[in-house]
Structure formats: C-alpha cells, structure tokens
Length: 77
Image 1 (cartoon, rainbow, N blue to C red):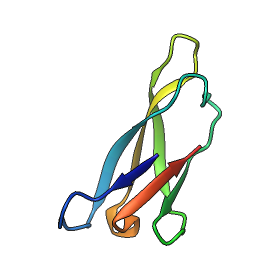
Image 2 (cartoon, one colour):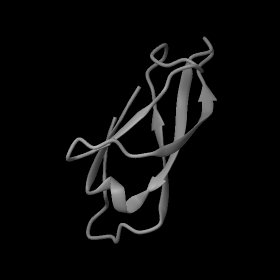
Image 3 (cartoon, rainbow, N blue to C red):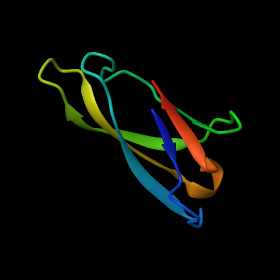
C-alpha cells in the first residue's frame, strides 16, 4: 500500500496511519516493512486493529518517525 504526505505539511515527530488489507492476504504472523521513496526501511511499530471473518488481517495501524518517511512511503507485508 502506497501513502503520501498531504501537501506541504511539516514532517516532524511521530505519525500514525492505518492500512487496509485484502481478505486472506495477511495473518497475525505477517511482518510488515515500511519503505520510504528512496527505498530505505523505516523503523515502525505495528498493531492489528481489525480482522476479516475468516481470521485474516483487515486493518493495521503503524507509527513511525515522520521525518524518515519522506513524501511517499510503501507498506509491504
């Protein structure tokens, strides 16, 4: 899932954002990678916030240092 910074907002402090996943794509054991536009991995905290009826992950919430995210990021399972 690709995300981008809104307009000319400052990228300071920590930011929290959510991602929705296709039914069946992710499980409780899935590890997520956060990459910025230049391809660098960014440290983050992740938690599952919702499940599909089949038990797969529907939503995840992520928190990361906004300054490291640059203007565009991608969250990969």
